[in-house]
Image 1 (cartoon, rainbow, N blue to C red):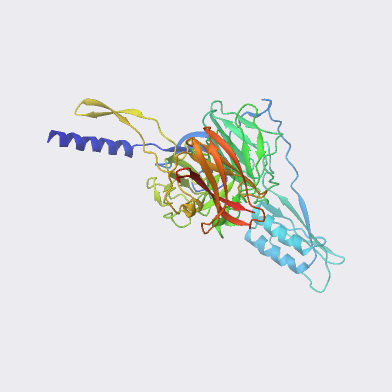
Image 2 (cartoon, helix red, strand yellow):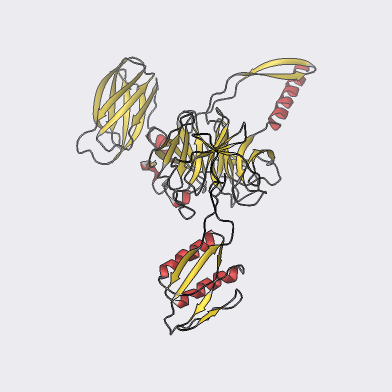
Amino acid sequence: MKQTLLLVAAMALVSVINAQKKITAYAITAIQKGQSGWSEVRLVDIVTGDEVKSIYQSAKDVEVLNARTGKPVVKKALADNTQVYTIRHPEKMKEIQKMRELDKTREVQVDRARDVQLQQDLSRKINEENLVITQVNTNVNTNVNTNVNTNINTNNNVNVNKTVIVRSMGKPIQSDRPFATNSAALAYDKKHERLYYTPMNIAQLRYIDLKTGKVYYFEDDQFGLVKGRGDVHNQITRMVIASDGNGYAITNDANHLIKFTTDKKAVITDLGPLTDDASNGSYSVHSSGRFGGDVIADANKNLYLIGADRTVYKINLESRVASYMGSIKGLPKGFSTNGAVVEEGAKVIVTSSTSTVGYYRFDLNSLQAEKVSGGGIVFNASDLANGTLAFEKTKKKKKERKINNVTDVVATESPVEKEAPSKAQKSVRTQPQELAGTMSVYPNPVMGGLVKVSLANQLPGRYQIQLLDIVGQVVSTKNITINNKTQVEEFKLPELLAHGSYVIKVISDDKKITGTSKIVVQ
C-alpha cells in the first residue's frame, strides 16, 4: 500500500513538473498584441503568450556599429520620396478617385499623361505604401485646382494629358534604423549570444548582441538581392542557425539559399536555388503560395522549411533538394505559419503573424498540431528563434524528487525521436534495410553524368554500388572495396541515360543493403 502511494505521489510530481515546464523563444512582434509592423524583439513565454524580456524596442535609441570595423554606423539623411507617374487616358482617373474616397487623407494632382500601365503600378504602390496624392484637373487651356473632397470631372472627348505626383506623407525610410523596414527572419546563435536578422526590404545582414544590447550591421556585404518593398520574391523571411554552426537564410521564392558563418571573419555565400524533389509534383517549394514562413534545423544537417501556408519541406543541406512532407493539420482557420522553433525531438512550435489565438505544437513525423499556449491572447509574430535542433540527443541529467520528505536522485534521459522521413525517402523504402553506416550522394540533381557516393562508418570489405530505375531494375553497377572510416567513390552514369528519378544502393558482399538514396538525373 505504501509503495502504491509513493508511486502515485511520484506520478503526480512528474505531472506538476511537466505542467510547469517553461518554453521560451525570441520573437519579432509589433508594439502591441494583434498589431502589425515587425520592429520589436521579445523573449516570449510560449505557454502564457506573454513577454519574458524585452530585447529591442524601436522607440529607444541603441548603439549601432559596423560588424567588420566596430565603428558607429553613420546616420543617413532622409530621402525625398516624391515620385511622378503619368496617365494617358483621363477616364483612368476614376480609379484613382475611388482609391481617394477610401482614404480621405489622399490628394491627387493631375497635369499631363503618358501610360496606362503606370496606373496599375500606381494602384499597387498606393496599396503597399503610406501614400498621399495631390490632384489637379487639367483641360486644354485651363488648370483647375481641386481639394481632397472635390470629385474629378473628366471630358472624354478631349485628349487631356495628366500627370500624377505621388509622395509619401509618412516618415521616409531611414535605412540605418535597426528595423527600418520591418523583419520576418530571425536566428539565435547561442554560441555567441546573438540574434541575427535582416530587414525584409534591405539586403543586409544584421545582429543584436544579447550581452550588450548593441546592434551590428554588415554594411558593405550584399545579403540577398531584394531591391525594395515591391520585390516580394527576393525578400528573406526564413533564417536559422544549423547544426554545423552556420546561419542559413532562404528567400521567399526559394531561389537563394544564403549561408553565413558566425565567426569573427564572417563569410556570406549565396548557394543558389533549392531544387524540388521529383516526388513534389505540384507542391513546388518555389510556388508563391509558399512565401513567408520560417525554417528550422535538425541535428543531421537538414533544414525544414515551413511555408506560411502550413506546408513543410525537408531540405538536405548537401544537395539543396527540398522534399515535400505534407501540410500541418489541426491549426485553426486563418492561422498562417510565420514563425517556428524546435521544442525538443520532433516537436515544433509555430506562431502566426495574423492570429493571436495561441501558439501551437506539431510533430514532424505526423504533422498533427495541438494548442500549447493557455487561453489568453498571445503576441502574434513574424518570426521565432531559439537554439534547439530537431532530433538532438540529450545528455543524461539528474533530477531530484521529494516523496514523504525523502529525496531521491533519478537519472533521466529525454527520448530521442526518429528523424522525420521525407516523402521521397518513403518512396524508396521498398524492402528492409540493414544499415551498418551512413551514405550520401552528391550532386543531386545530377547534370554532368558523374555522381559521388560518400560512405561513412561502413564495415571494411567488398561492396557493390547499384543504379536502379523507378521499377527496380538494375541499370549499372560498380564493385568497390571499403577500407576507411570515411570514403568517397565516384560513380559514372551510363551514357544517354534518360532524365528522371533513379535509386542508388550500396550492397555488402553478403547481400545486405547498407545505403539507399534517390537521385534525379537532368
